[in-house]
Length: 131
Image (cartoon, rainbow, N blue to C red; front, side):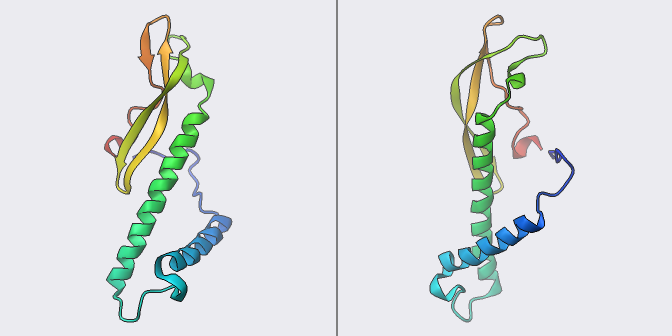
């Protein structure tokens, strides 16, 4: 499993407060003006609704984050161990299947001019299958 880069939870009190607000808003989106399912709906059904919403939120967060990260790649990521610097030549669609569903983004594609090789700067261990 990937390690936390800073060892700290990202769930600050402010993040928790905003998530509570998003949950309240989401209840209205899912259940309408009543903001809850009709009386008699089992907790298991409420859990299914919450899981569906949660997994879509998780998937979107991962997709948006991966896409943004790929657009903010540092130049050091384009340098290989030999010191050769790759030239960016565009992007290539990348999709990883996660527990929450497929996550897609435009992965930077680069070329090593001296070695005459394509170069994809992302870590090949990304995704559920890589741990």
